[in-house]
Image (cartoon, rainbow, N blue to C red):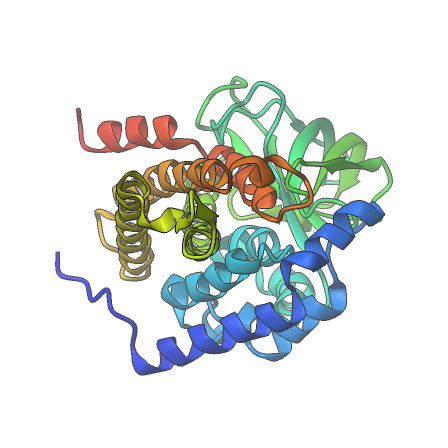
Length: 383
């Protein structure tokens, strides 16, 4: 398999523009203010709409949906730029996760009513999938969808850790329409507007200050037109959407670990101990060199996975796991080393490096940690 990993001229320009945009409009100081103020939304709708006006939310979608058709290879440039400043807008939850579900299987009416406004930044979508004790099993679903007399469905269940779930405009909810709780078959996806009676959303506050929520469904009534894709056959659909979101998250992790490393490197070049720059110490040089290598390996794995998914390469599924395992290990290592090299000041809340170590821990666990993806890689390859 031969895939070009260098950026084209247009991609390099997009990357430069995105980096400049988030450096100006979403510096780390903004994240601190959002956290300290206890902001209920946790991000800025106007800034998200600016991203849409720049065409960034349209990047991964086909032209039929008003997209630019630039695929994940373009989308990861945006998520990487967001990672560099830990920008909190719901690009991955709304566009690369829930939005991809609608793009892959939504009806024309569903896409017109919800996907188009999401691409325009006017509405935010969230995928309510994770449940208590489900770990990383996407089809471990206990939420039930029972056919009702009017031809629709009645939904009952509870979802946890719903990304961008607080004050989202609509939820794509995975629910079991047949089979056992852990069966890979019998899962369906339903589109549930936020104002639907019986739907209760409770804001969760994660350690990385991102928007998340618990979504409870109690006798929620939806029509037959709420079904996204085939009944009982959403397992592959969910896996495909999560894979896309996983690669986009790898892009975000890549940007964040790069920013943490750059900050650490700058500190090594200015901090003096015993009258000399600590960056001149051989032990710290070796540690910094290792971090650089790990970041570059993570970059190659992420770019390869994105392009493989765009090209429908048969190895794409395994390459997604390679990228996530690489990025999870690398980001945690970079964040840990950064705190150690900053020493005492790195342990204080006043220093921004602490935001990266918290973000690294949450990213590591989102969509499967490194151990999960190494096991998935082995299974996909018949080991």
